[in-house]
Image 1 (cartoon, rainbow, N blue to C red):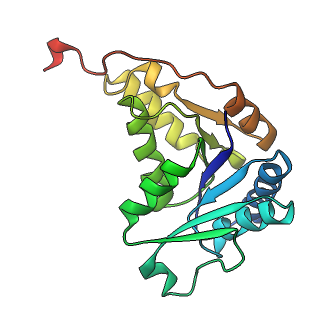
Image 2 (spheres, rainbow, N blue to C red):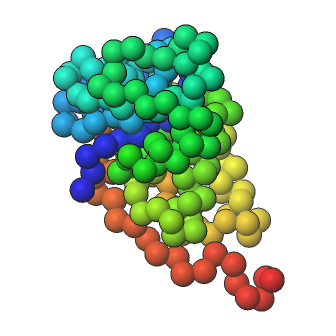
Length: 194
């Protein structure tokens, strides 16, 4: 049962108002549907917008922030709970531990790194939670083409690629996550490939 949704997204707002507006609306939808938000704990960019959206609907928001970023004064001070950790690795582990599903909004290196880590954990059978992209304005189309190329080139199984849910709207992404049933791929490397 999904109670807490982790959102990975940029600490910047991007070059289109659509990104920030949608992050806020995603936060609102999380709060309206009775979920809690788990995210990186900052008050800037899309991160701040998704937190504000959830809080505006009375939802609980748990931020996870490394100490060194708090010292740069980007910590959101109005959260339900702000957990301070020592490293980026601890941040990712704690966000994973606290959440029942993941949504990636647009972002940069940090968002990609967080997304691919949970996808890898899922591929290895360490996670069985829904992981989704909210593909705003085609932002993730180049990444989806890359994933197709990974499958075509024999580096990724189609079944593993399909673990990643993709949606163009907030309602669709949340509905897909609620309907998610994990697929079990027994081997990701065939003995003949070793």
